Amino acid sequence: MKTQTKWLIGGAAVAALFIVFVITFAGYALSTYNTQQKLGNLYTAKVDANKADLSNLKSKLPEAASVTTEQMEQLGKLFNNYAAARTPAASGAIMNWVQESVPNIDQSTFRNLQNIIVATRDGWTERQKELVDISRVYNTNLDTQPSGLILKIFGDFERIKPIVIVTTDTSRAFETGVDEPAVLFRK
Image 1 (cartoon, helix red, strand yellow):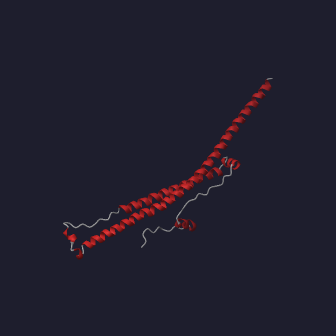
Image 2 (cartoon, helix red, strand yellow):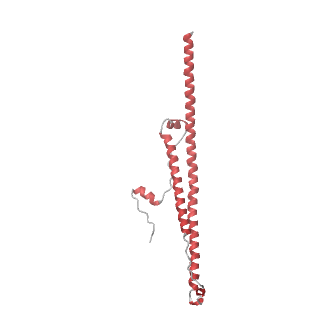
Image 3 (cartoon, rainbow, N blue to C red):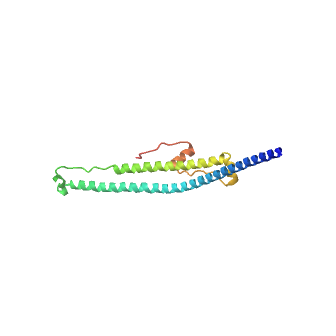
C-alpha cells in the first residue's frame, strides 16, 4: 500500500506542477496578447493625435506671421505719417515739438514668432519619435520569443512601419545619401 500511496502523491505533485505551469503560461500568453493590443491601439491613437498636432502647427505659424504682417503695415503707416509731418505742406508742425522723437520698432513680435516656430517644431519632432518608439516595442514583441510565437498563435499581428512626416529635403537626403546645407537667408 505504501508504493501505491507514493505513486498517488507523486502523480498529484506532477499534476499540481502541470496545473501551475498551465496557469502561468496562460497568464503570460494573455498578458503578452493584451500588451500587443494596447501598443497597437496606442500607435493608432498617436497617429491620430499627430494629425491634429500637424494641423495645429500648419495653422498656428501662418496666423502668428499674419500678426507680424499687420504690425508691419501699421508701422508703415506710422512712418508715413511721421514723414508727412516733416514736409513743408505740414507747415513744419512737427518742429513745434520741444524734442523730436523717431518711432522705435519693437522686434518682440518677430522673436515671439521665432519662439513659436522652434517650440512647435521641437514638439512635433518629439511626437514623431514617440511613434517610432511605440512601433519598435510592438515589432520587438513580434520578433522575439516566446512572445512572437504566442502572438502568432493567438492573434493576427502585423509589423508596424511608423508613419514619420519629413520635409522634402530630408526625404531627398535619405534617397541620395547626400545632405545639402540649409540656406537660412535667401537674397
